[in-house]
Image 1 (cartoon, rainbow, N blue to C red):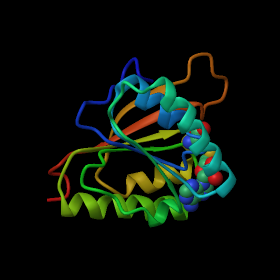
Image 2 (tube, rainbow, N blue to C red):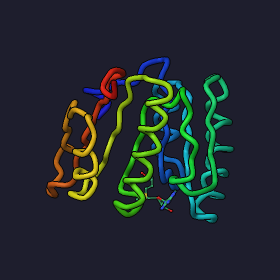
Image 3 (cartoon, protein in one colour):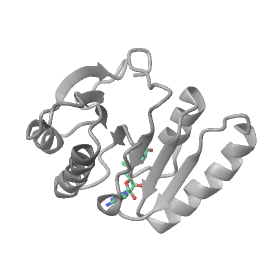
Image 4 (cartoon, rainbow, N blue to C red):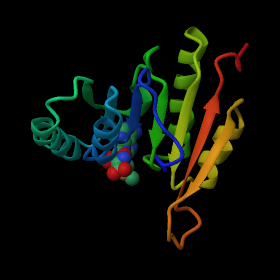
Length: 163
Ligand SMILES: C[S@@+](CC[C@H](N)C(=O)[O-])C[C@H]1O[C@@H](n2cnc3c(N)ncnc32)[C@H](O)[C@@H]1O
């Protein structure tokens, strides 16, 4: 995916349902930008913290912060500096809808261009996205994948879309 999509220096990525943090750390390492991972399962969160500790030994030179938060994605207070939001089917579409509504409320308060990246996008998630003025920026299939869902869809909401 990162052959055709790149993060910018001013981006901050929120990985909702970050699990053990593999995507969070990958983005941090390759783009050296601030990342936030949110995980609601206590043992998985502890594993993510351990992974962060060992990853940080290798990535000492990267000054951008990594924040891992324990809690529900739908309770995350979206910050004005959050610009990219990643989801790998972490929860039900009802929860996804709440998270997207929180993101949109934040954009209303602090207008900015944001991207939402869905990996393995299910129909219910795509339906939620269609309710808002996002445009589909790109669709990237996983090379060699046999399943139709094995793809990334990147949606963009431009700063003035909610005027
Ligand atoms: C499919 S895994 C994805 C893990 C990781 N993003 C990856 O790519 O390896 C989904 C994760 O979302 C977490 N999760 C489920 N519901 C959640 C919620 N409401 N808030 C935060 N995390 C949640 C699960 O515990 C699980 O670790």
